[in-house]
Figure 1 (spheres, rainbow, N blue to C red):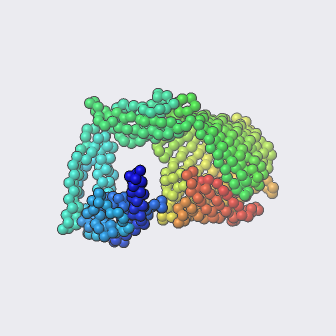
Figure 2: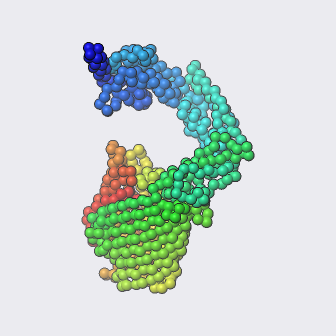
Figure 3: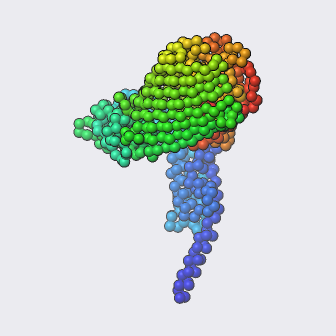
Length: 597
């Protein structure tokens, strides 16, 4: 009994000693100003001291971190071109490297990291042989440049990638000699490569669990068996599989060794997304009213990665836009139809527009296809039947037309949800042929957007919209193809769809030509997720098919804020009308998800 009590007391005593040994830790970094912050970031000791979990680190953990810091700090200095540094790390005055882990102090309160980086080394003699037939150049890889290890790695990788692009899938480093010359502070590097044999693509194996039939997976992948090995082809196959939206992941893995016949097999590891998806969105404008949209999507409805998409939208609820708009549509699409990068679709839609100057109820049935020419370029074309019943200031009109829509989209934005650089262009041409109620013609629209980041926090965004209806006279053209301007999609601050063509007092219809211009200055605040925006919009509507200056302009301007989320920025804009005919609405507020453009 006495021995048991003694053991308990001893355990309590040890616990108290251990608790007392854990105390607040201070880490001091002594180094040149341009290196101090980076050294502290690289230091595990500093990470322990800065931890916010409320628990003081144990002495053994501090010792382990400090001893690991030597290598981490030296690696950082090598990457900055310092190849003769002196690094000292003391724990309460004792050099960390001299302390054995089994003799760790019972308490550590101060860590001092002292760094003398020495001279900056520059590259001297450089060679990577044999050089690839084509390889991207690496910035900073040249004699006289600061000798950064990361630059040397990047240059070596660029040469290996160049050999892989030429079909040598197993190119690798076979040897290297790196010499730091301290007298003249230069770094010489000679890297030897082994390109290996030129290979061809072999078999594609499919692994993983998928509800999509294997035959369809292979049709979608479009595997070019027998072609010269090219990593870009592997990227294309992954893109095709991911683009369907059916697969959660589609990763391609090359075999470790080539086959005796000079081919290289690849395995595609596939996993499915959940087959069904639901989504909901909403937007509010003081004049446009409340808008809501909903989507139901089945990603693999027939077992061949076919997608059935049913969506609906209601707009103008509680607004001053004269009525409620709605749209209900369904679209069935099938990837890899007729050819690998061609997606066929059939679409049916019913839509009602109840705007200030137009009421239209339209039904559309369309068959078409989308050709994915590259990651950033696609074409869409088809044939459709369109039936509309319209009412405007000229009275009621019904028409039925046959359409042949063609759309070209080019998207080089860095982030479609919140772009800071790049550009976007979409051009659509839709010839239509009269079956009943109108005349033959063609509708053309153009949407151009460009983004430029002028500093770390400031982005300039510009948009231009162009529209034209050619062929039928203004009074017999399909009324719902004509253009109006005003509202959140064109000119913020102006009444929704308020600008058209005034044929006579009290008689206003849409125009055959349209031009919209928008500019935004987006400034990110010190709170990274929050941005402020200033904008100016202008819109033109004319009676002729081409902009000849005889139409009317109106403008709007304002400011807003954006708050970044995982699904895009939340947008809050306040806008005032500028110049233009007609009554002005005063201050308007727009709330939604995503940038205005």
